[in-house]
Length: 232
Figure 1 (cartoon, rainbow, N blue to C red):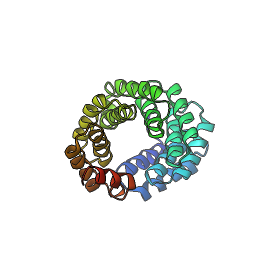
Figure 2: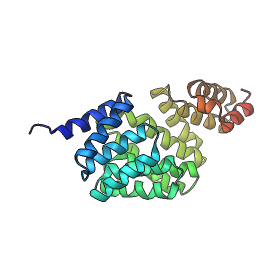
Figure 3: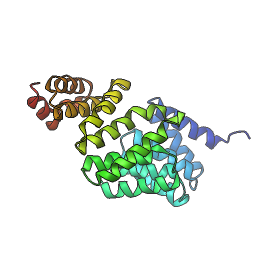
Figure 4: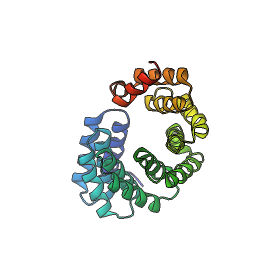
């Protein structure tokens, strides 16, 4: 079946979004919505573009409409969770991630995102551990999500860190930082773990690397506090 003009617009919107052409992506996604205002996939694409543009409120609106049009749209539920998390709406994010897991039980992202949010809040760490382990099991056998492996390893390692299980956390966080060496957050989590293990020199090296990679981390009070504690 030949793709429709709307199909082409949606594919272009996602391609442009993935390659950093955000204005073009937004234009194509809006054209698709205008052409098919009751199409859930068009609304979902618009939400994805807004997320990539750092516009979580607009993304939430698009994903909410997508879910209203198609309550079984797992991607839109996941997007709702991400948008809510970015807006600091923890309960709403966890609820959306839970719905995403029910709709797509083989998609590792719903498990990982829930585990990360719980660990970040320091809440329900037993549940977070189970979710993070499940995410890592699923991502290991889904080739389409191969690029997510380091992030999900980092989540599992961070859950162990928050549980005080430093011996389990360290190899996971070290592996994540090795696989994705340009992600400052992974090095920061590793630095925290090294500090907890009494490995001050390693903690300082990892923390400094994190600040060089990520300007937000360089300005973060918690990171600066860590550097002071380990002699950075």
